[in-house]
Length: 211
Length: 271
Image (cartoon, rainbow over all chains, first blue to last red; front, side, top):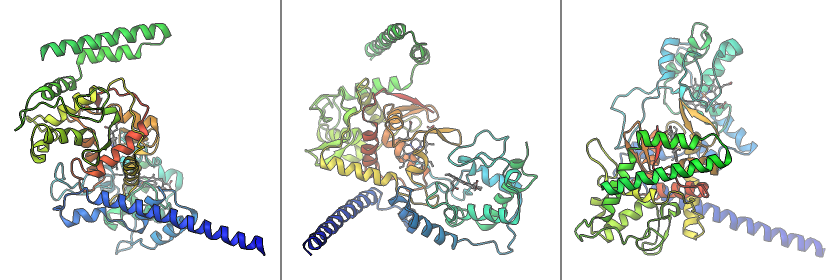
């Protein structure tokens, strides 16, 4: 009886300790967020400042430094899978030539006073920033895995086509907190543009699948 | 001016001699020497910027017609040697954690009588219009050469800034879901052809932090750390934080903290 009481007491003390620690954590996080937000000019256009807002996925990935615990990871992947939208005609493979232009361009979306993109700059998919694709292009980054000969090694079944489309549309549907942007989900590219990129990755004629 | 340049060259030559004896003693291939030779042959254009900064430091300017020679960069009034390596730090007189740049501006305001607006109007160079701040920071940075970066963030205000910096480093947002961590947490990665260091380790952060302010060949000018960070934030497709804002200083506390122990070697040369 006595031991149980002590145990309960200890548990209570432990719980309070946890609560205090958690409170401390939240207060330092909100202080940090305040310091961050107040570092921007107050006369910035509203749509610029919206870029600092976080959706639930961003907030969770930030909190866990991109290594979420299993249950959080599964929840993010489930939720993100449900966001994927397809082009109206339903065709997931477009024109690889268009896809090549999109994959190669890192332009678009730069704002601010110092070096903004000229108005009307078309946004690119920026795939080469992170992936090797065509073996002919040497200026590729290595943040993501090589996609060279993707169709040669993975095939181009309906399943693979859908996978590449879905992955580009919302990378987090497969890997919560990946470094790869959610290109369709964020309205960075349209579903139609994504079908061109899918073609660039999977079309046997595409340089990605040539020598 | 000319005399100082001569002194600088003599200094480099001295280093060369030193490197030569060391390399000789250890019997290592003389990488360092060839580096210095290269430097002597081409010259880092930032050396001239540094000299201009030194002149500016000593010249009486502003409404109060004062030089910056009494500026307290954290090691006491007038002490420039080793100061950059220990910044950012908490300053009692302003009640703030300040980096080299915000402290310099503080001195331009308090000692020389400039308004903040005047002081930071040209915080980076534009074609045909050199920035005084850049030159002054290059001078201040170089006076820490050979000193280890030491930002232990022991003071509670500094510790809080470190936490804030770490928080911002991992904070994802914007149309590309980027955070600093996206580009700067792996070893040996590239974005396109540009190499990215892992800024969460001493080696990675050190490689970056010890070499700033640095001459950027692609830009044809010296970039201070504030400029570097504000530009990375632009690349992340976020709006730019204000020059000298807490977000930038917090990131610097975080990065200098991670880089602590690395020996300063500025001005660096970057892509």
